[in-house]
Amino acid sequence: MLNNQTLDKLSGMRLSAMAREYRRQLESTPTNSLSFEDRFGMLVDSEWTTRKNNQLQKLLKIAGLRIRNACLEDLDYAPQHNLDKNMVSRLVDCAWVNKGRNLIISGATGTGKTYLASAFGNAVCRQGFKVKYYRVNRLLTDLTIGHGDGSYNKLMRDLKKIDLIILG
Image (cartoon, rainbow, N blue to C red):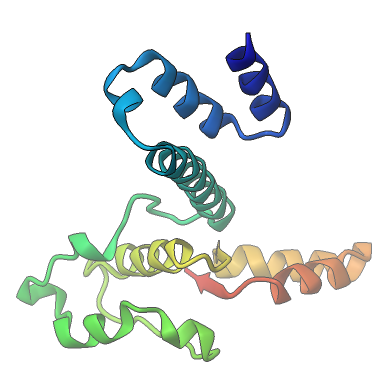
């Protein structure tokens, strides 16, 4: 009975991942041999991991990247892409976002600029920063409409909250 009350309380406190892990531990005999600290650590790790994953999924959804699953680890350094591996490795830590620096990606059509921008956007989201992808013509249209309907100030406030704006 006490276990059910504990599960209800965890769910009531919105600690659903911790409740799932606790339920799994109750059903699993190997975890019964673990110390309290180890079992409690597993509960906390489960909740922490779930929250971090949910935060990342939310940031990626808000970002609206053109290629949502693009990642820097999957970059193709083939000669036709003319991509400097050393430059990418210096930018991977995303410290340039913290410093308020810009990243300009240029190249011929079909060389992977959109993929590269999406991969950097994904990496920046994984660092916990807010990212937003805009088509330039759509952003300019929204700004123009904002002047007419009074939503310009709100749009500007929203843009200021974003750590990295990707223009495509």
